[in-house]
Length: 257
Image (cartoon, rainbow, N blue to C red):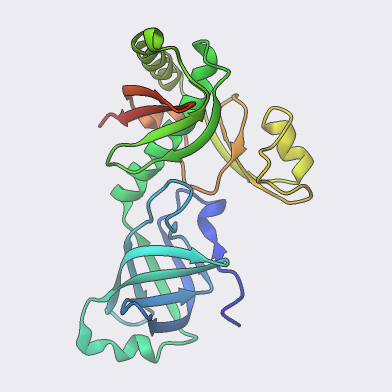
């Protein structure tokens, strides 16, 4: 298999799967000095789409030697698992492991938190419409633990910021308490558009098969990240601040424990 062959992303349709098997294609040291594994498939989510990468470990079959995965990135569809061998004296097991079966284990606590933060960001998109902020157009999201936010195109009058902050927080926690199943599906363009309220963002090419995340009965949206299985798993949210500047609005939030 050539390294230009895209890595199969198992988490795309199995977001709750934390253990898996794969085939080791390459172990190497990059130009930046970091060591990396390339596998034919992975359950590790690479950093992207506003979500941090998974961490965990990879172990060669019939061996107790682990490669500790500290960062995961994707380039041209190929996923790079960066990290360090747990025992440097046994690094040859990785160097000579091409074609061998490996076992993958994702850090559960980190994945769970990342998924809750990401789903929480999507739920804000639903809430804004319910509190009279439907004119705000979703932009980028930052779903990292250190200050997550969702950015929208459009503004909120300064004299309404405090009230809207409270209204969104009440609304989002009401939706969390009601719960609702979360679905992930790769769909034909037209079907995906219907699921997302009739249209898709311009960055989704017509004729493509985008992956859609749908929270409960609310409209879906294109997303490549990991999410909770039910809205109630977000537990609770606090909207810490709403900031409007230069035609953009940021809604900052945190999730409960």
